[in-house]
Length: 86
Image 1 (cartoon, helix red, strand yellow):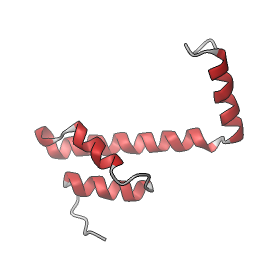
Image 2 (cartoon, one colour; image 1 turned 135 degrees about the vertical axis):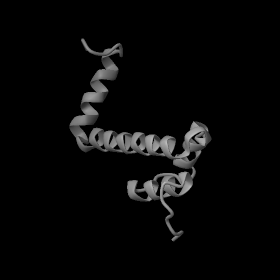
Image 3 (cartoon, one colour; image 1 turned 60 degrees about the vertical axis):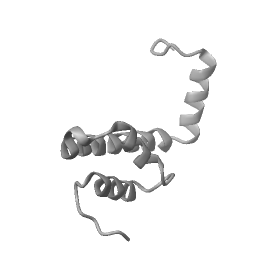
């Protein structure tokens, strides 16, 4: 409670969720780090042509995906790699 502005009930729910599903926070963090990595790579490759709104569209348009498939899609979109369509 000392490290969050949230209500005590929110903090309790968060702790309970992590007790029941401890891998959930790790999975979220791994996904976040991969998305940030892909965004940085796309920005560097595309330069001024990079559009954050289109990047978000590319991330979300196919729904939940394994990270390796998401990575292939983003790299194909941003021309980081020429990946043949499957």
